[in-house]
Image (cartoon, rainbow over all chains, first blue to last red; front, side, top):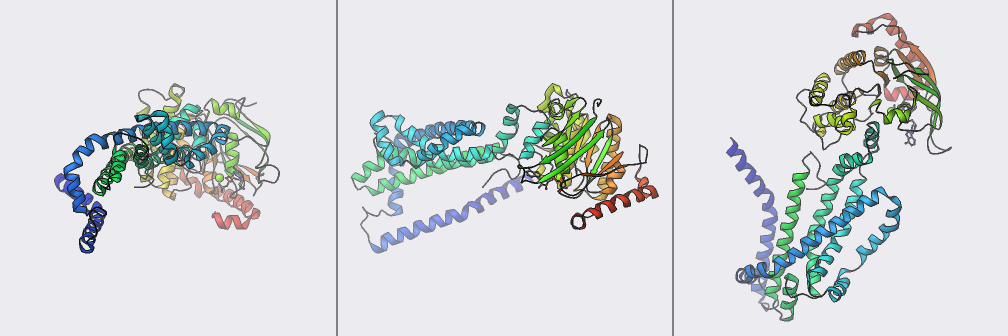
Length: 264
Length: 269
Ligand SMILES: Nc1ncnc2c1ncn2[C@@H]1O[C@H](COP(=O)(O)OP(=O)(O)OP(=O)(O)O)[C@@H](O)[C@H]1O
Ligand SMILES: [Mg+2]
């Protein structure tokens, strides 16, 4: 009985991912055919099978030597940016005045083009981890701040009244009501931030690094090595998808009540 | 002067949002003695919920004051004298049914007279009393609106408050369940000696439960009539078939109809 149910769950999952995998495969096939039929120069438009060979030969080395560093930067930046954003949101919710003063600057921070800030940070901090982590943190900050602020305010006035009837302290209201009701929003923000953090790390690597996927892609572009560029792109986006899904799994662990998750 | 559990409402008026805003209550005077059960009936929007909030110390009236056993209502609220059943169930979706009933215990800690190793048992017993045995581990989203309302009732009773403020707690229930809960509520009040302020749209329910029924006029709410209910307690459901019961219900209904036909048509008897 249990085995049957287990198997059907596996089939369920397969059926759910099948359409998106099929579309992806279809695109690869079309791309492969187009490259072969039109006979375009391979150094400009490598076919998927070329890229696949490149990944087979270089993939492991790329992952160990470069992707590892990119992801370390992305994850550290994600943790830093999200932590600062969460603290800021908590302060904003309890001090309206501070929010009025600082929120416009949070928007300004978000509109600053990070491609322009990245070289500056590289000048200041050199070819170290720091500028990459800071750029990744910068790009994670805003989505987490906006979602967390919204979540912390999402409690109904009746929930506040209920806690008030129980003569609950502000502290109790915060931990028992505000935090749980904001979790769905916070996770929605964290999921957006998780994918952005990888982009932030790569952009920072463009402006000065001696390792990392961004470094590999930039170097490959000088040599017109489009195969390696594609391999780098494929690896980093795969890593981004994995990171996103890890946050998604944490979300499922944390939000167990029905209809808790904002999107699925 | 009121003893513990008694409530004195003096000239309470409520005006929302400054002078142009909605006037919800106008010069309410009411004295409720300890252990008394008072039902409040009135057309929708006349200020019943507002009155309950003012008594419960959640809202400051524009004028007048409320005295609860010698304290202001916000003092009484800080001393956790009130149990409040809101018009909406107001359960926390991330807590299971049992967790919601235990919330006051968790928040109050040792301030809860029922606090102790058996507070879980007390919560389970309360859930059984309101007919929710077997639903302890459900989430609020998995039970019906009427069941949610009963969880909210169990939660309000869980810490034995002196004064129960109840805002249409049984509005979402079928007649049969409502009868059962009415009897249960009377039994609980008889046992604990709680003072109850009970808002309802049902004149039948008001008369069945209350020692006195207070009628409010359409907005702004004014007291149009305070009716003594002549039946002694404990009561049985049969009193509803006695001629005195019908006569009182008819009289009160006449008052409501005289107020506003449209409201009545919208809300039913
Ligand atoms: N927070 C508020 N701000 C402004 N006006 C309000 C507020 N709360 C209530 N009112 C107004 O006060 C009046 C009375 O509202 P209240 O909720 O007390 O009515 P009610 O008698 O409980 O109605 P119902 O039977 O429909 O629940 C309404 O006309 C409403 O518009
Ligand atoms: Mg109301």
